[in-house]
Amino acid sequence: MNRWDIFCRVVDNYGDIGVCWRLSRQLTEEQGVSVRLWVDRLDAFAVMCPTVRPGVPQQVIDGIEICSWVEKFPATEPADVVIEAFACEIPESYRAAMAKRLSAGPQVPPVWINLEYLSAEEWVDGCHGLASPGSETSLRKFFYFPGFTSDTGGLLRERGLLRARDAFRQQGIRAFWGRERFRLPSTPRKDIAGRASSGTLKSHPLGSAGREDARELRVSLFCYENPVLPALLECWAAAPVDIRLLVAPGWPARQVAAWCGAPLELGDFVRRGALTIQALPFLPQAEYDELLWACDVNFVRGEDSFVRAQWAARPFVWQIYPQTEGTHLVKMEAFLKRYLTGFPQGEAISDLWQLWNEAAAEESSRDSKDLAIAWKNFVSRRTEIDQHGREWAERLDRTGDLANNLAEFVMKRRAGVSP
Amino acid sequence: MSVKLAGDLQSGNVVIVENLPLVVLKAQYNKSGRNAAVVKLRMKNLLTGRVSEPIVKADEKMEQIILEKKECTFSYSAPPVHVFVDSDYNQYEIDAETMSDVEKYLMPDMKDVVEVTFYESKPISVVFPKVIVREVEYTEPVTRGDTSGKITKTAVLKHSKHELQVSAFVEIGDSIEIDTESGEFRRRC
Image (cartoon, rainbow over all chains, first blue to last red; front, side, top):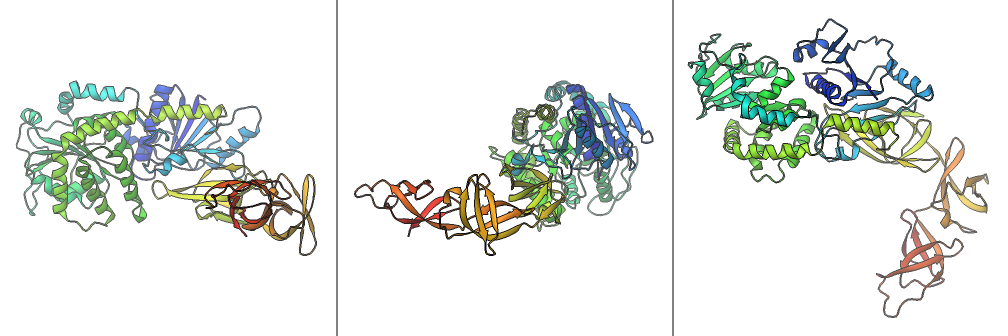
């Protein structure tokens, strides 16, 4: 049970590799298993984990063997546990090797798992852990669903994460904002030409030391393409309190740059009205966690950052991965139903989330005024949302974490216990 | 044999999985992430009767088979088999175990036309008409004043000695309708 192969295809963005890398590290560090991570795009992986060398087909990082998943897959002895992340199909030759091992006799066959997408919908509870019969062989693949109840696989959460979060909040925040990449310099690194709509972009007029101690609302932004974003930026620029927006690279930076009317490069910061925009590099996972812990509000997307925002227990706004036929909105509602249970001020969250997601689905007829109201309501309930977020994280914590649950699941399958 | 996507399966479809014929009792389609979908199936092994609940990707290809079905009438019992005959007077022996759920409805000179399903020329199941009529051989007399029909009591069927719950007003010698899917009493004829 000690050798695990995890297969990851980077379909788009970084969510797939983000989850797989996090899972690999946790299995290695906490479960003591040997993990081999097969990734089809090492270049994408290197963005998240700079120590990865894209041109090297086989390398070891943090005790994990990282292999390039090439089309002509090499002859490989299957591991004891085989995970295909997000329903990616493992190579045919590898599957044949698994079947061969099954038919070879007394050896215990590999436990084959499809790690599914995260959803809060009720049907997940009834599908978690079920087997998928093989058509030609007796190899069975188990569907493992992350989720929010004890009838699912739970969420990825490293041992000691919540303690580290709390310690950071007590002692680490000031040092965090003092780090080079988060500190606002006294003079702008780059002048960005103003634009002529409703204001002018100009360099930040403040000195660094005074600025970092000042009470401003700090917001992290990680999102997909979202037509609502410009309206929200306008709203923030006109806000009665100073807002510092920490923008992730990729889609968020491109959209903010379009709003600014100039490229937004790493290290840039621009100011317009009450809004100061700061461009961030792609952060390693541990540092991104700290950013979520340090900010007052986090805009997150997809799966991995969405889960981390819940552990951060700060007010957050989720952009769910857009799907056809508005399926994602159903999934978002399913999450909100769970998340807002027992929270009387739930509308302050759901109104903003719906506007943030419906517009992305081009189904919204509401305008920017609605968004400004929703944002104002959300921020005014920040204290209550913060408290609710802490209680929610504690509740999730009690369902156990995904890596540990997965290891237990595998042990039971190997012992012949039915799901 | 034809190929069908798991996402298109409906109850009643029969597919071959791991060389076994399984009939779909229920198919629950759910969209997962990134426009993918999964199907949770409730399936019954046509050879053993074992029910299982697998899950498959909606785009998985399944081998669907169309089973041969024939209308037959019951001829006689020769344990451990029951013999049925079709309209061409072909005889088919069916294991009593295979039709354990409906064996209780068999009776000599039975006029009900049943549907026999074949897999690779072997009869594997017998389906009775949804409603059949049988005679009550014994039941306790009705309690005076209690003839509303809401109170039930046990009745024993003639020939099979099968027991079921019937309305209080049913008497010995009555013919009653039975729902073969639920196994429940419907009404007195």
